[in-house]
Each structure stands twice: as structure tokens, then as C-alpha cells.
Length: 190
Image 1 (cartoon, helix red, strand yellow):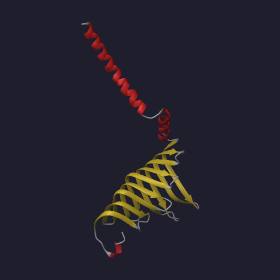
Image 2: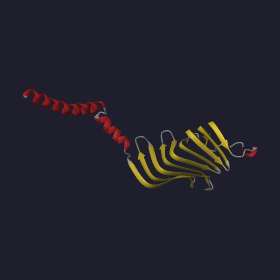
Image 3: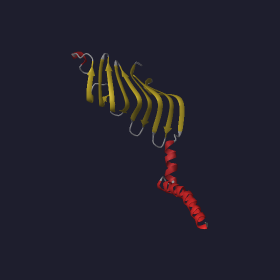
Image 4: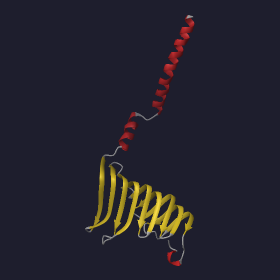
């Protein structure tokens, strides 16, 4: 009888020790303390603002206006993250020439690149572009959308993937293209 009690006692000890050992193993294989704090630090923005308006001015003219519900600033990464964002570009006379909306926009000062994600819509004159992810290179004024893209001009609709274009939509490259609408010589240069 005594031997059975010892066996039950040892079984309980193993049952209690096993989860502790598994937890210690999982923690030891995870991040070091320094890596953990580095990860937390890089996730948290140094500055946060709500209902933000940012203006880019050249020769006393507003050239760009950025509106966002929330903006997070990361100084070390030189990066800005904006949520529920609208970018409006203007010409020298103050006329709107382009409008971009997205759920999120990451602006990298290092690369001079804007990455828009989530219900991205670009409106330029009578042209509309719809996608989920768009990278806008500010240095070369080019855009790239790796996923599905829909381009609309009046009653014409062009769909495809992997869009590459200048911001004027004059030089467009698109893969796996399908189209709907009326095609004539006037609008052949979609």
C-alpha cells in the first residue's frame, strides 16, 4: 500500500514539473531580455497625434495636403504611419490634381516612399485606381501595386495585377489584363 502512495506522489510531481519545464524551454528559446525591450521600443511610436493635417508648401503655394485620423511618428526609423489617410496634391494655381485615400499610409523618409494599404483609391482627373497595396516612390514619381488592380476611366474598366506606372498614368505596365468597355482611338492610351 505504501508503495502505491509513493507512485501517486511521484506522478503528481511529474505532472507539476512538466509544464514548468516546458514554459522555461519556451522562454529560453524566445527573445532575450534585450531583444524583448528592443521589440517593444520599436513598436511604440515616439509621438502620436489625432486628426492631423500636414501641408507641403512651395513658393507660398500648398502643393500637398495630408489628412489623417491618427499619425504615429518613429524618429529612429525616420518613419510616419498615418491611419485613415487622404493625400491631396495641387498644381501651382491651387487646383486639385490628385487624390489618394487609404486605411493606412507608411511614409519612409529614408526611401522617400509612401506605402498605402487597405482600400487604396487614387483619383487623377477622370482616372481611378483601386487596389489593396500601393507603393509610391516620391523620387521617381512612380507607383507599384503588386496585387490586383482596377483602373477606371469613364465607362472603361481595366483589371490586372502588378501595376507599374508613372503617377500621371501615362506609362502603365500591367499583367494578366482583362478589360470592359468601349475602345476607340481616342482612349487607347488608357
